[in-house]
Amino acid sequence: PDYASPGNYPLTSNSAIPSYLAVYDEVVNGTNTANPGTSGSITILSNNTSTMRMTGTFQFSTDDPSVATSQHSIANGYFSVYYGQ
Image (cartoon, rainbow, N blue to C red):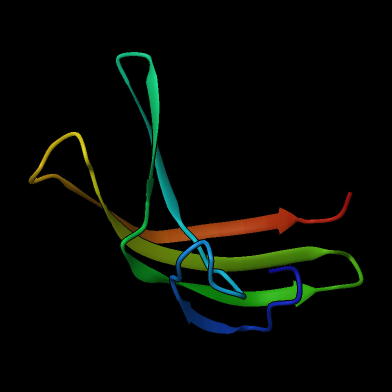
């Protein structure tokens, strides 16, 4: 959320308020599939509400529904986003 304070947050469901989500987006044979994170966390490093810029790190795992035993693990992710208009 744009009002998030620095700290570590576990991933939540999309219906949770506030929600902290991660998605592994893959394209296989021209088909795009978005696989939501099943476990992991997001760390907000900074959130400047004046400049509307947030930075942080993330790590998460997700299951691949097209392959029963397949799991993707993402580690050492980093983001820096502008959330203004």
